[in-house]
Amino acid sequence: MDKIHTNFENVKEFLSFLIDNEKVHLYDSYGRAWFYQDFNFYFKDLGGDSFEPTLNCLHLFKNEMHYYA
Image (cartoon, rainbow, N blue to C red; front, side, top):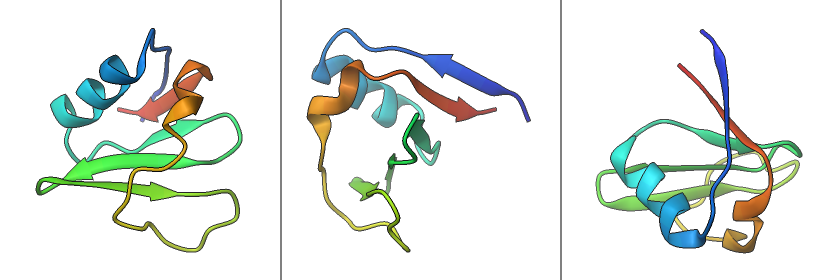
């Protein structure tokens, strides 16, 4: 698997990426993670043990993000 870096211009682009890439986990450089699956968004915060079905920290869209493909 390759680590692919990406950046987003706005929240809409960030959420569109998640929807268009269902089940792909998107990470910021601090370890937060987001993904979209079965019409739900999931988020895991720093040091979190599991994903929660919620959208949090969308203001971080400008951080460098990466995913594995």
